[in-house]
Structures are given as C-alpha cells and as structure tokens.
Length: 248
Image: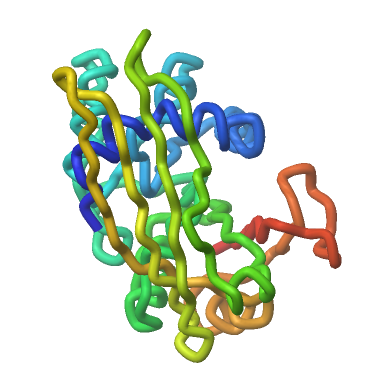
C-alpha cells in the first residue's frame, strides 16, 4: 500500500511522539545484538533505520510506499541509498541472507489475505540465515473498540512548523467476521495561508493469538515466543501488543 504524500510528510511528527517511546529501544537493541545483516520490512521514513545505520548496523530496508521511502532517502546519506529498495514482503529478493528480519509497527496488518501472509512468511524464511530470527508485532484487538468503532477521535494536534497547525482525526468501523477494520484518517493542516483537508481511507487486518500461532505453523517458520509487550513479559489480560519471535 502506497501512503499518500501528506501522510509521509507528517509521519515522523506523529509517531516520534506517539510510538518511539514504546518500541524504538526494543528494536534497536535487537538490531545491535546481531553481527550479521539485518532487514527491516516496512522501513518507512527510517524511524529505526537511520539510528541503526549510524550505530554501525549492517542494515537494509524495504517498503512498498514510494512516498515514505522518498522521505527516508532525503534524510539518508547517499552512500546508504543502495540499502533501501521498494519491494513487497511477499516477494522481495536479495542475494544474501539475514541474521535478523524485523517487520515492526503492524506491517502484517497491511497484509489482508491469508495467501499473501503465508507468502510473506515463507519468503522471510528463505532469506533468513540458519540461526536467523524474525520479529514482528501486532496489536491485541480490543473487542469493545472493534464492536463500537471509533468516531471523530483527534489523536494528534499540534504544530508541524512554527505557527503552522496540524491535526489528525480517526474514524473506524470493523468487520468482525472478516477481521478487517475500515479506517479513515482526516488530516488538516495550514498550507500557503489556508487550511488544507485530506481524507485517507484504508483497510487494516487484526489478528488473534491462536490465529497467529496457526498461521506460523502453516508456514516454513517455527514459532519461538509471543510476548505481551516490548519488555519480554508473557501475554496476559493487560497485554496490548503481540511481539512475535520466529526462527528458521
């Protein structure tokens, strides 16, 4: 899925506030713990990649969104541009294998169909070294929120430049049978002395624990552990994250 250019423009502003304190240290620690090459699926604007590459990681990144990758390339030194490519999880190709592959921040929620999910997992298996690991995360579904939906939730409001306002509003309805959320994000920001408004609609897949386990069982990969957060705690009633670790 290609993100609209205005989403890519504001991505770092939104998620540096909302997300980096949640998962950034976890993934950077996992990246630094391996000596061999690392691949990030869904590299986006480089929220992890930039810091990892500056720390000396043998890092590569892929994404299907040209607009997101273009933002990353603008920030990235030219000598590292060849480490970034526009590829899809289900059919990416490299002439190397990786000691670690990560797919952070709900990458698999963008893969709606089971056949594509399995294709992605099997392609990842083929690109892992013998002792390689895959780590990805998904949100634990909140059944009350899914049943009731979300109406006009302003989840971000602030300035993207001094004196220039920006906000994002979320609306969501869920198809509980097919486990698909229909999400509309409304962006409003000051541009050229006027308020610009854009709506972006997309579909997002939600997963349950045993579904994840069975999906991995059907793939070439072997499930190691599903944690309930980024601190290595077990899944429990208060868990809000599936942090999934697989091995070859």
